[in-house]
Length: 451
Image (cartoon, rainbow, N blue to C red; front, top):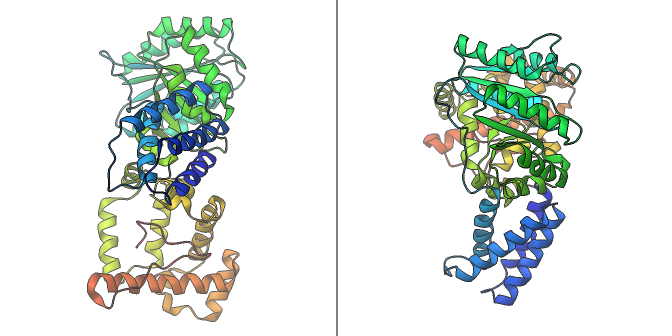
């Protein structure tokens, strides 16, 4: 989502790298360029003014570090100001003195509210809690069924009342059921509208009174630009909103709404939806998001995703195999599956410092992994375990089975062999390798997959 803004800021910082110490006039020129970049990214004018003033104030009082270049100095100041705009610190869900903790989900139709409720339920379940979903969107056709299907996928039960018309009553019944059955969290999905109106707010307030929520989370679609900011302000003015859930951060919008939301609404962004899968919900960390926007990566989130995707015992076993050059295509296939659980490769690369600037398009990266997987799956178990048995006819069969060319199969087999030799050499079993082997199409092997 922030590709355009990240690119503009990177251009500004690149030009700064060739300069010596910045004068006050040059700092103002840089601030003007940053101001334009933020406005073009659809950031609220109110936020842009506050942001530029913040950077200017920081620049005036900043100590000049001789070890930092002008570009590094400015990046440091911009990074700190971005964190302030995004909310300064990570804010988690409030605990409840008496279970269950009630999380009221609000938002307009089309914002991804029902899906966000299911994603939050899955996130809580993965954290060791026992959530219950309550279907209180009784106006939108098939909303209850949608939540039930999502609940099944997330492995979370859904309390619903077929043919119900009184949302506050359904919510109250769900709360009683949650208490009786010992659920730790009750997530209440409410009705939405196409726009903010008196009827919507009245029903939302009635549901809130019936369950006394610990948190009221407003779901906002980051793809709607400045209108999302206006919606947030309207809800905050009418309802006791305690936090925001941003959806569709994986889209191709300019991202200004996400940057403006916390500052304008005065409420913290607590979660961000970064994909279509139920597992694609992340706690929102302002410092990490600021680093991503500036192309500095997000190593902490990458590590957290890797810890969830890769089994520690399997990782240790894989390392031992690599050092003995016993790593096979069968092992590689298992690593590919784990890597896919971390999300699209384009998103994974954005979390790696400097990798977001690779000249390979997102689509190319995400298209290559299925291609490699298809080649490996077209091999027999014997061929996966011992690539040396693959003669010309076998490679032709693999190419036909995977819908690729023989050259692609040859390239993958050759590079896979080079990886094994290189790792063995680096572990002391031979001369040092001269570089990282790549995958078909010029893509490098991702970290955690044998290099």
